[in-house]
Length: 79
Image (cartoon, rainbow, N blue to C red; front, side):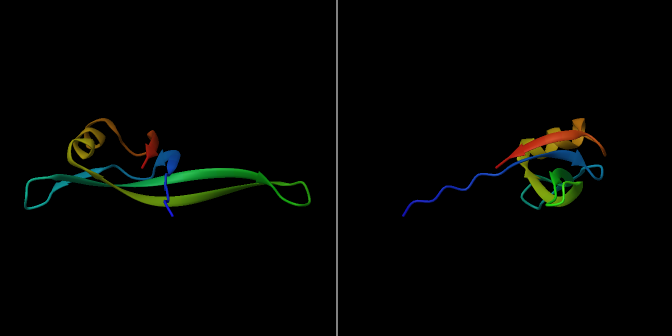
């Protein structure tokens, strides 16, 4: 049976991206993403929940992210 996994996250960065290079010379950036969800409970109250996700960016994407993004920047990530 074939399967297909796809994730789309939209949120804000929790910290500034830090660009690093692995021994092969490829760029790597770790970013933290805060994704907010707002939903209504069974008794009608609105509850806001935040999920924190760590994301690893590679190669040119890592370099661009470290150049243009900073803490609090809104981002959409698909993978």
